[in-house]
Image 1 (cartoon, one colour):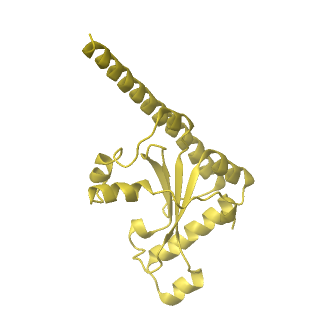
Image 2: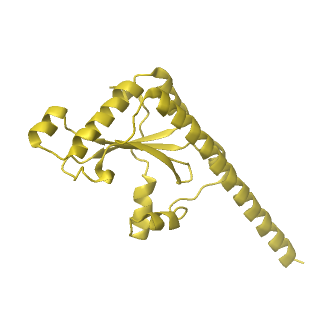
Image 3: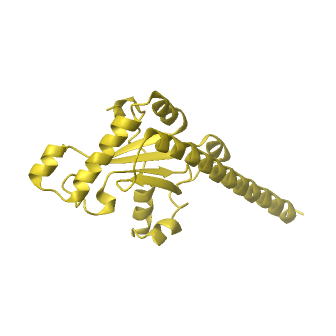
Length: 187
């Protein structure tokens, strides 16, 4: 397993967790309503803004332990997903290099005592734009390979750039309108 070669930054807040904390709700609508309330950025931040990859994995259990403990099916599926990601995908130097160069990455353990039959307690990889919008995810229902993962990285990098460029345009228009309003008020 090559997770140690990734420049994980676990101080990064998971956008889904932050949005839920702001609104006090965990519904999709509540998260969407709070999407820009949790962070602020500058044009310079947006120009260099890297997307975020959040890897959620079942912490501290092996396949034998899952079988011995008779845990829900989700636990075994989560372990298989994590093993596929760590062994098949992260064994490729080009994937590791791409993550380290173009992404911010966070590793987030799932408590093995949690109800792994629920999707939110299963292994997954979620991709977020620099601005916090969810770009997509891969989870236990997906077949994960280095090719599929590499394709997802490229697709989400492009989406991130488009969202950052859109936000830059919005900020620049907002600044221009503010300057025009000040000039008009000063006359």
